[in-house]
Length: 224
Image (tube, rainbow, N blue to C red; front, side, top):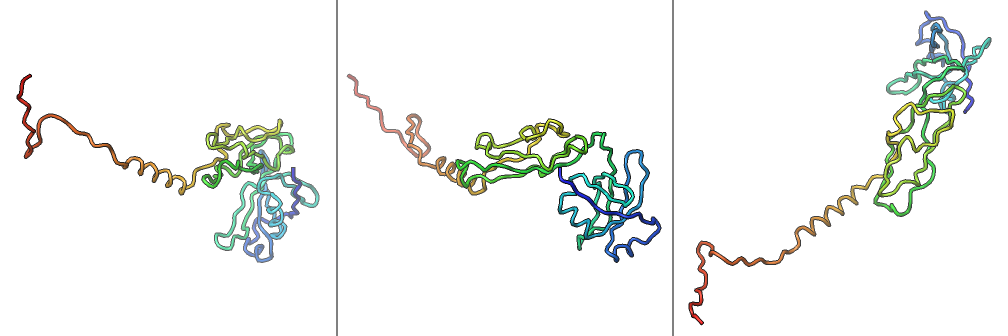
């Protein structure tokens, strides 16, 4: 599990948040199960660094000076245009209680050469929800895409490599990754099928009553 630390300071809830942001600080709140909410602030540069290290999906240690608290980022609000962080919700966790968290999925292996250029890889899930103790949160869950074939074209959550102390919090049947035929390959098959169906058919001669405007040849009345 990646170790991520983030310095934080107590914040006056009545302080104007826009002034804090102008000073390069991000207002935040920390709360937990049966734990009262606490107003804090963090440096924007430090937050950006922690996010790049994986704080959105990993346990983070908030260093408040006099104490350290294990938290998860519950919500990160960003400016709709500038994308800079506006506010953060931290959820304080107990190291002895099982939690649910989204863990990134990492692909390993390579597609089989038999698939050629007729197939493309499609990601159904980028992360998967798991339940475990905070100290057991994995950096990522891997899945081997070399198992994919034209016949076995979908890998499910049950195909992920999951540590013994971690459990899936979603259905094992949920699709994670798959290979799908390209439009060009499908169009080529459709064109070939159309060509086959429009091939010349043998002429069928039907004997019987003449069509309107036509006459049947006279029957041979000669008797043997």
